[in-house]
Length: 260
Length: 226
Image (cartoon, rainbow over all chains, first blue to last red; front, side, top):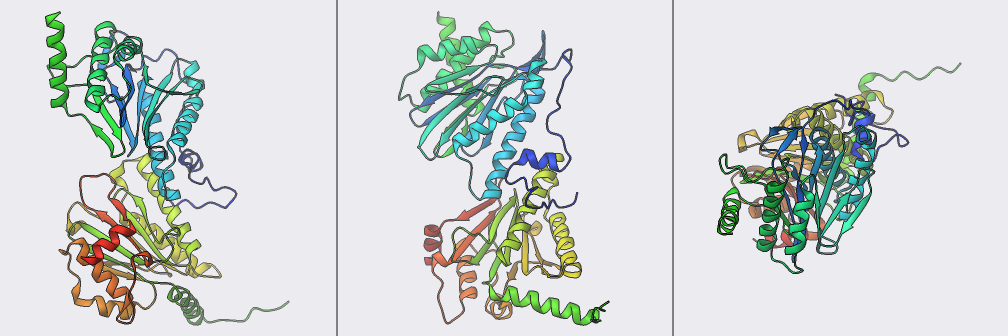
C-alpha cells in the first residue's frame, strides 16, 4: 500500500471511516439478505457507582435455537476510559466496535488528544445510524456506551436505538433479549453511592436472572470456567474482573438460590 | 523561445542538499536512546503544543526536526498508513521497517523531482519485545535510510552532540540516567536546558498494547534531578 497523502480539499482529517473509504476499502456492506441465519448476541448491562461505571455482558451468541458461541466477548474496551457492549447481529456489531475503537485511537493520534466522552458517544451514534439500511433488513446492532468523563470526573452511560438515537441515562442501562429481566434486577437493587464491589455484584445478579428467564442469554458456565465479562471504568481506567473473583460471586448467588 | 540554462546534475544535487541542510540546521536537535525499558526520545522544544515526537502505532514512534508543517504532514501520513494496514490485516503487520521504506520513497522522490526538497529529518523508532528487536530508522532529507543502533541524533549541530554523547550511551541505563545524558548532550557545556524547554516521550516495552507515553514536565523535572 502506498502512503496516503491528500490535497487540502480531499483531506479526511481525523476521521478514520472517511479515510478507509478514500483508501478504497469498504466498512459496512449496504445491504444484507434477511434469510442469513447469523449469530445474535444478547444481554448487556451498565450501571453507575460512586466512582465510575460497571459494564457487564453474558458470553452467549445464538442463531435461532442454536447456541453458536459460548465465549463471545460482547463487552469491549474501546480506549483507556470507555467501553462498548453490544446486542444484536454479532458480525456487524463486532465490526462496528472494531471500527469505533480504531476511530477513537486514530483521532487521538492525529489530533494529539483524545475525543471528549460526549464526542465518543456521538461518534458511535453516527455509526449506528449508518447501519440503518442493514437494520431495516434484520441486521440490527444495539450498543450501549459507558465511560469515565475525565472533564467532569464522573461515570456516564448511553443507550442507543436503531436510528442512531442517543439517550444518556442517569442510573443504569440494559440491552438485549434478556435486558428486561436484567433491568428489573438492577432497578430494584440500585442505590446512589454504591461501591464498585456492590455494583459488580448487582451486575452479576442481573445477568444471572436474565439467563434464568431468557434462553438466548448464557449464565455462568462453571463447567468450562467461562464467566460473563464484567469491568469497571474509573478515573484510573478500565479494570476487568478476574474469572476467580466472578466465580466466587456466582457461587454465593447459587448458594442463595439453593437456600430459597 | 527561451532556453533554460543547463545545470549539471552534480551541482543541482549539491545545491538542493545545501538548501535542505541549512533549513534543518536552523532548528533544535533531538536524541533517541535505548534504555533499560525501551527507547526514550528527548527533543529540545520550547513549545508544548507543536510536537516533534508523536505516536504512530502500538510500538512505533515518530520524531521529526526541521520545518514543522513538512514533518507533521509526514507524521499524519504515517498514522494513516499504519492504521489502514492494521485495519486491513492485523496489528502485528504494522512494522517500522515498512514505514521507514515508505518515508524514504517519498522523501527521495521529493528531493530529486520537486523544485524544493523537504527540509526535514525524521526518525521511526520501534520498540521490540526484547532489546535486540529495537529499531531506530533515521531518514534524511534525500531519502537515505540509516539503521542506527542504541542512539540516534537528528537536527543541526549533530557532530558536537555526538561527541558529547559518544561513549556514554548505555542501553541498560535507567530512564533518569538516559534522560540526563540526552539533556546534557543537547545543551552542551555553556547552557542548561530546563524541563519546559524539553519534550520527552518513551516507547516502553511492557504489557500495554500501546507502548508510547509522553513524560509530563513535572515528571521530567523529577527524573532529571535523579
